[in-house]
Amino acid sequence: MDPSAAPRHRRSRRDWLVDTAMFVLAVAFGFYTSVERLHATPLPPAWLFSLDQLVSMLGCAALWLRRRWPVGLAVTLVALSAVFEMVAGPMLAALFSVAVHRRPRTSGAVFGLSVLAAVVFTCLRPDPDMPPLALLTLGLALQGAAVGWGLFVHHRRRLVLAQRDRVARMETEARLRAEQAQHQVREAIAREIHDVLGHRLSLLSVHAGALEFNPGADPADVARAARVIRESAHQALQDLREVIGVLRAPTGEASSPTRPGPPALADLERLVAESGQAGMRVELCDDLGARETVPDGTGRTAYRVAQEALTNARKHAPGAGVRLRLTGAPGEGLTVEVVNDAPADAVAPDAAGGGHGLAGLAERVALAGGRLEHGSVRRDGDGGPGGWRVRAWLPWPT
Image (cartoon, rainbow, N blue to C red; front, side):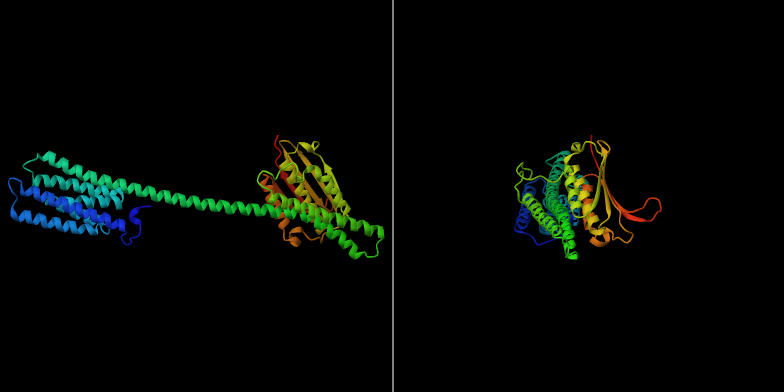
């Protein structure tokens, strides 16, 4: 950000102190030069001496405008300094102002004009008590010091502004990262609760529906269904307590040995058994060979894929046969495929449930570095309408 581009505002107390100091120094420089000329031999012409003093006073008064028109004032005073000696004080202050408030390229151009003015002054009004080269060197040293000091202040202000901008950007980025982290945590919690409770509540719905539509069932069947409902409700509460317990646990205690761990790939048999108790015909085909070698994270994601797919099949294709197949090997990846044989008029998961479960499942698989595919399938042979398939591929490093 260029300080020259900053909007103008009223002078602060510090600005008034700086401007007053500049004015006093310029007046003191002019007064000192005037006294020196009174003791010089020979004396300058009276009209030139008076005109020199008048121009110096006007230059000192014009310094109060240096913040509004720094370049114009500096060029004017530099041009006058080629002829008038006592205006050197205001001219140095104007050079400093240009270096502070304008770009270095502009400051360099004005400084070049001041060098040319110093050469002209040395030729027009040589000092009898000082060699011309020494006079020119002194003038250039003063002008260079004023411009150099101004450039130092200019770059320091730019550095301060850059640091403020950097701090502001860092604060904004930190806030955005925190919001993104909170959003990701909320999505993870929503996925976990959906996966945990969706399966249990679907079991409750199936058994409760069976009791509702078959009130004259055998008492033993009614008792068995009631027991499954009670066990499923109890397990749903337990799963919910585990999720809430993990959220409330202090940092570092979420994976404590005393806390129940999340489901893994080894729990698929229990998942299939629960689905069978709900009246589903599930066929499990395990072609992995060594299921225990699957990484924990990959196994949990595969379990959630199978759980969500079985829940959707139970909700949208009741009574249909379901095939759950696991294939893969280290280095090739793990593939989980769930296919149900649904009638042609079966409702697809996206249509009935809004697709939120599959959307969350796709996010979970993507976070694990895999990919998820789902859609309708055709029957083999006659090409008639088939069911629904969910297939997930997950990385399995060697």
